[in-house]
Image (tube, rainbow, N blue to C red; front, top):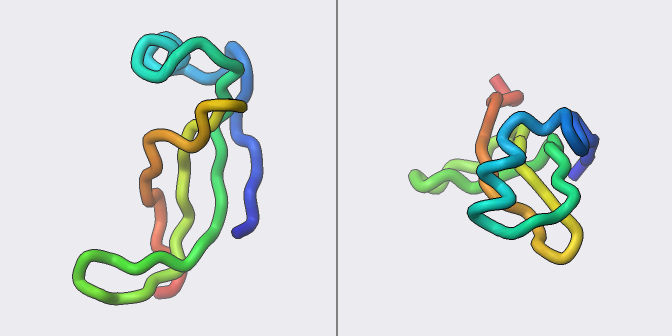
Length: 69
């Protein structure tokens, strides 16, 4: 998976929510490209976005774009 930082520190807009829900940390918004299996069984190449912090891990993973059409 190709991973890239989109935003870090005060640039993360939902930082207050992340601190309240998962704990205080240095949150980063990340994006990457991966192959995922959808609930219908299909394999698709997608761009994923998520939030990540050291010691907490990946949270709120979501598919932003399908790249294989």
